[in-house]
Length: 216
Ligand SMILES: C[S@@+](CC[C@H](N)C(=O)[O-])C[C@H]1O[C@@H](n2cnc3c(N)ncnc32)[C@H](O)[C@@H]1O
Image (tube, rainbow, N blue to C red; front, side, top):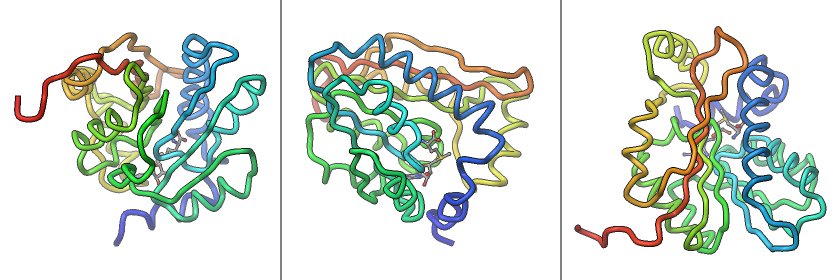
C-alpha cells in the first residue's frame, strides 16, 4: 500500500479527531507563540509548512498575523489533505509534494515549520538537509512532534502507529544530534496538555552561519 493512502483516508476526519484537542491544537498554539517571538512587524517573511495536512496551522498563522507581510506555502504528499487545505481558502499555496522533493520550491524561506509529520519520513537525515537547503541563512526551523523518551512514550506511540502506519519517533537527544550539524538549538519546549499524553516537544532551531562542507 502506498504511504499516502492512509493520510488520504484521514483527510476528511482530521480536524475532528480527538488528538486535535490534546496534541495538535496545543502544538499549533506553541508554534504561534514562537512565531510571535521571531517575527518583526513590517518585515516580509516567507513561511513553509511541511506535511501541512489540512492547512489548519497556516490558516491560524494567516489570521493571527493578518497585519504582517507573509508569503505562506504548505506542502503535503497526500492529495486529499492538499485538496481539503485548498478548499478551506486563504491566501496560501498548497503544492502536493513529498518532503524529499521540496527542492522544487527553490531556496529562500525564512521559516520552515514541520509539526507531527517528521516521524513518517523515511529519510529523516535527508529531510533535515533539505530544510537547511531551503532556508535563508539565519532562517529558523520549528520542528514539533511526539517524542519517545521513556517507556510510557514507547507504549503510547505503538498505539498511534496502528492508525498511521510506519513511523520513527525520535528522542529529544536524537533530534538534537540529527540537527546539530546545520542548526543551533535555541529552545526546546515540552508541550503536554494532559498527563496521559506522550511527550511532545517543539524545537526552535536556527540555521548555523557556518557548517561543515560536504565530506567533512
Ligand atoms: C499527523 S499529520 C500532521 C498534519 C499537520 N502538520 C498537523 O500538525 O496537524 C502528518 C502529515 O504528514 C504528511 N506526510 C507524511 N509523510 C509525508 C511525506 N513524505 N511528504 C509530505 N508529507 C508527508 C501526511 O500526509 C499528513 O498530512
